[in-house]
Image 1 (cartoon, helix red, strand yellow):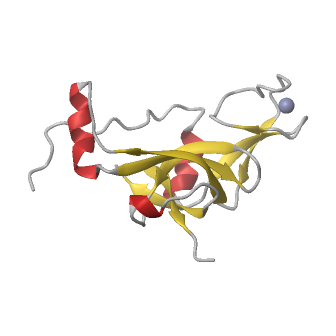
Image 2 (tube, protein in one colour; image 1 turned 90 degrees about the horizontal axis):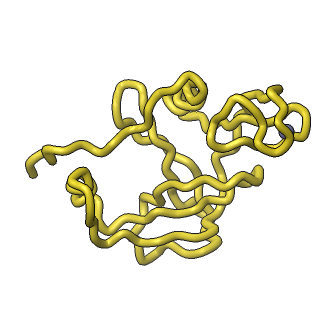
Image 3 (cartoon, rainbow, N blue to C red; image 1 turned 120 degrees about the vertical axis):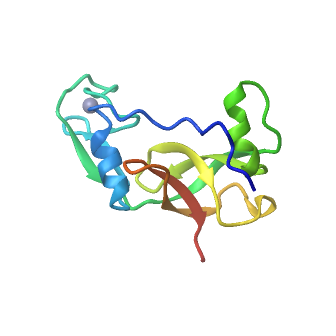
Length: 143
Ligand SMILES: [Zn+2]
């Protein structure tokens, strides 16, 4: 199959998010946590959105969670860059409730889309997209 002429957009490596992407390249899921009110902070930012504290610290998470909600993308429409996603359809976009509490949006991979269920237990895996970017995605765990 020919390579799509348009590539998927990748995250921009900002200084605030760089520790996240550095950890992802080492297969670790990390998130900022407020050292004052203990809130997890997602997406990366310089201060806590709950209390305004700038005492935020990167913390490693288990990478485990469960599916809170999801949708199956069966057709790509709209902007020209969507062509890059066509080889992936059908694919799952899900909200993942991480065991530590925060909720992330990601893809569920590694099983047929028909098998994806609410509450399904999943664990993070990292897919390399560029030399610096490893995207966190989630696969069902065997229970
Ligand atoms: Zn806080």
